[in-house]
Length: 112
Length: 114
Image 1 (spheres, helix red, strand yellow):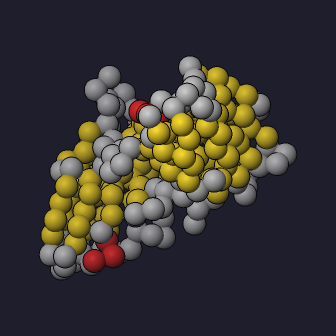
Image 2 (cartoon, rainbow over the protein chains, first blue to last red):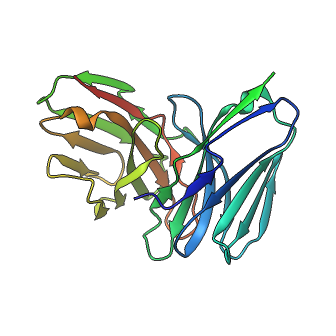
């Protein structure tokens, strides 16, 4: 079963705009990770945020985590055509041996 | 850091045949995970190893599926008597031991069962 629910399911923006993607989950977690997947390829790790952290930055990425609302957001600033991909949030649930539970993903299209 | 590698990258087989996939994790990583991803869905956990011990298996892993990690290094995933419903991307990931460790994924093996 899939724990995470990403929102929106699909997002289309113009190059240079910011993209915001949201993820909600159901159970308590140790940490939450965001991954990117280009069509038909493996997953690339973007960022990990621990349950005791509220915000984290990495380059053009900003992730927030609200454990009281069981939700996270991923912001990509100044988007580029190369950011076009599917984005997944994955949670590492408490007591779950670090296995990841993924949402269905968000398809981001960045128009040049 | 050479990353996680998987072989083959693509496999086409006929229903009823057996297939075996291989995963080579990042060399210093103790943990190795297998996931399955179908079209339009996120990956779903299948099983994981800590060193050579298989510590957890998902209910998705039917009796036709078996995974091994004989020396705590590479792992194999075998599917016996394949069915069309087995068609999917099979992803392998590895990580260091301990909480909050990033899982690094390989490129996946795409299986098509005809």
